[in-house]
Image 1 (cartoon, rainbow, N blue to C red):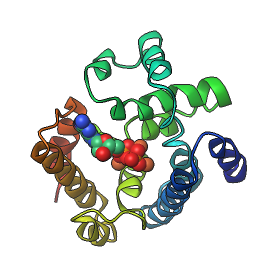
Image 2: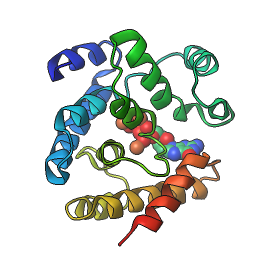
Image 3: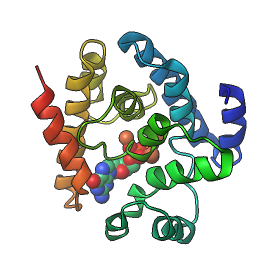
Length: 187
Ligand code: DGI
Ligand code: FE
Ligand code: FE
Ligand code: FE
């Protein structure tokens, strides 16, 4: 599927601000793919669809998790964690996108996980550093992204965990697994 077709699809599901975020994630993912020699078409397609299900009704996402092979423990955590996994399932069902690498990059874009592929790291990081983001620490991660994608993902993961802990939020296991694995992969 080409970029313009993909954008035409997600446009119908996303409010304007989320669409603009999505386009910035796609541009950022393209830059990262060039820098780290990843498949740019896959990176862009995964980025365009990463928040495809962000505005699906909770009941529809819940049903999708129950009836698909997605991990059921998602249901015990914040619904904000559902849109990536659900999008990974629904892009295949609704648009025939079957590519496993794209699916995984979308599925894990919020939490990360252990042993992320380069494509998964690109989407995870692009979502965090796209130019519209302005949370504390993002500049440091942007600078790291120029030099070392593992270090940048590690810092993003650490910032997210610290932020969630300060708010007293429960943290999904894959979020910790991503942090631990990236820590071990640091040079
Ligand atoms: O969809 P986006 O807003 O572009 O970004 P996202 O999918 O990366 O993150 C959505 C939210 O999920 C963000 O506020 C951080 C939060 N989050 C990430 N990991 C966890 C988490 N929330 C909880 N409760 N637990 C997690 O492990
Ligand atoms: Fe998201
Ligand atoms: Fe993210
Ligand atoms: Fe996003």
